[in-house]
Every structure is written in C-alpha cells, then in structure tokens.
Length: 130
Image 1 (cartoon, rainbow, N blue to C red):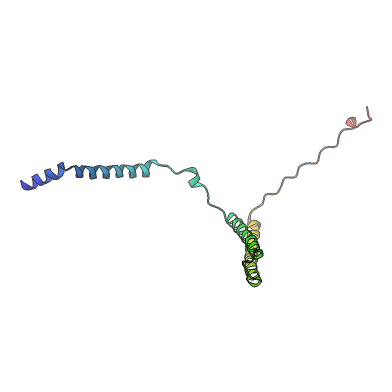
Image 2: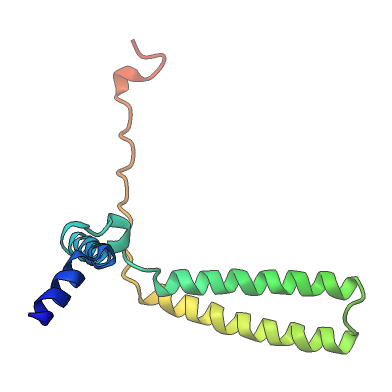
C-alpha cells in the first residue's frame, strides 16, 4: 500500500510531467529531423576538384610572393631572408604549376568544331554585273 502512495505522489509531481514533456518534445524533434528534413541541393553538389584546389594554391603562392616583396621593400626582411623565402615560394609555385599542367593534360578535351568557310557570292551578286 505504501508503494502505491509513493508512486501516486511521484505521478502527481509537476517536475516529473515537465521532464516527461521535455523528453517527448526532444523525441519528436529528432523524429522530424531524421525523417522529414531533406538534404539541400547545394549539399549534394560535388566538392572542389583537384584543379580548383591547385589553382587556389597557385593564387595563394602568388599573393604570398607579392606580399613578401612589399615587406622586403618596407625593410622588414634582410636580403638573405628575402632571397631564401622567395626561392622557397618560387620552388613551391613551380611544383604547383607542374601539377596544374599534368592535371589539365589528363583531362579529355573536346575538339573544336570548325565552321565551314563562307560561300562565294554568286556572279549575279557582284557589282558591275547586271
């Protein structure tokens, strides 16, 4: 009998109902998210290609070279440090440019369609002949 009174007291406690309501709301939100939210088309888009990554890396290296030259002229680096960093960036740029060339050569290129030469005008279209 005592156990039934304790269970009844627990069942009538408002904090229990609050916790139960919060759990039900969380379960409903998870259910909706899993089964009713569909992926956006942009989520299904392919990621950047290797060529895009290489082109971005090339641009970053060129920006770094430009900034390095500016900072050298501003007096932030000695000539030895400048030459060392410049050579390192130029070597890295050469590697990236080689990879870009290899990547673009490996891609299948479509041949361009050649347009037919314009037709010769008929003899009646020439000036002076009527």
